[in-house]
Length: 221
Ligand SMILES: Cc1cc2nc3c(=O)[nH]c(=O)nc-3n(C[C@H](O)[C@H](O)[C@H](O)COP(=O)(O)O)c2cc1C
Image (cartoon, rainbow, N blue to C red; front, side, top):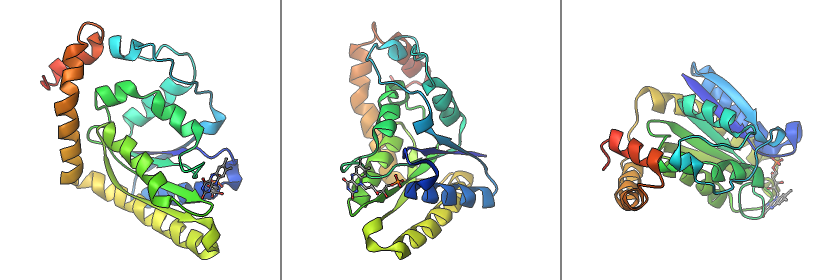
């Protein structure tokens, strides 16, 4: 079983959020998973240019590090997303990775995968930032087992507690994958999304040949 963690703070080893990610990955390793941590801030991942090639042909034509990172996520059983709060949001680096993912959304390529999210913030909005990352997981077809975060202003004890909770959630992620845990509310989101997006696929079937063929192959239309 492979678990991949995404680190998106530019502060490298000094990152508070990295402490949570390291603990989460250690928890997953303790539970028996192979782990890999990817620092996307050290990679070259440029903006989506809305060329539509991924919908037409299935691959991204931009020559940078994105395809390599996404191949690793697609090969993983579990994905841990992490970001500090940057102006009530995730970092631009992580958002850029998300924006390069329209094919992952259109073809629900995280289906069957599980993940969770981690954040640290200066003073607040922990749940809001976690939701942004967990929504990405679910809109790509995956399931989220939860999230862990803390506001640094509350003192060192909250970071210690969040590190411990991240470690536990890393272990729980492995358990969720092993037992093929069901999340009926998230499945409802997946079903409703597919029901609505079916019309986008049908309306664009000539332009989005790869998406359309994929939906046919999956018998979603
Ligand atoms: C550009 C920038 C924007 C930030 N915006 C917020 C914010 O809107 N709200 C907040 O509570 N903290 C904010 N912070 C503080 C960070 O979220 C906080 O220090 C976090 O723990 C940093 O994590 P890191 O060490 O993993 O980079 C911001 C920090 C930076 C550098």
